[in-house]
Structures are given as structure tokens and as C-alpha cells.
Length: 56
Image (cartoon, rainbow, N blue to C red):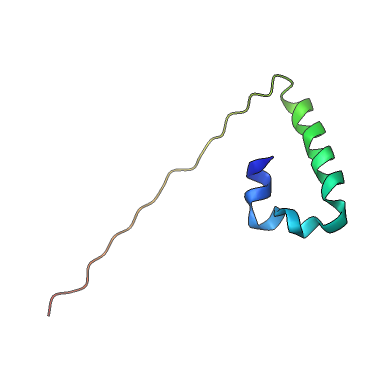
């Protein structure tokens, strides 16, 4: 739930009056997917790029 609501495309304020309905439906969907309340998140690799200014 927290991950979903932390995303810019599904932030709570975007749902307006339908927020409670969405939260209820999301909880039901998650409960159906994982009745034991355990989820695994597979994160993509992190790409770190660094640079330096050229010396004058």
C-alpha cells in the first residue's frame, strides 16, 4: 500500500473522493495475491554515473 501511494502516478491526492474505494480494492487484490501478507520486491540494478569537470 505504501509503495503504491508513494508513486507520483498513484499519490493519494489523485484519487479524490475515490481514495477509500481504491485502497479497499487494492487491499483485496493484495490479500488475494499473497494471503500470508508476504511480498518480494525485485529491484532493477542501479546505474551510477559520475563525472568531473575538466581541469583548466
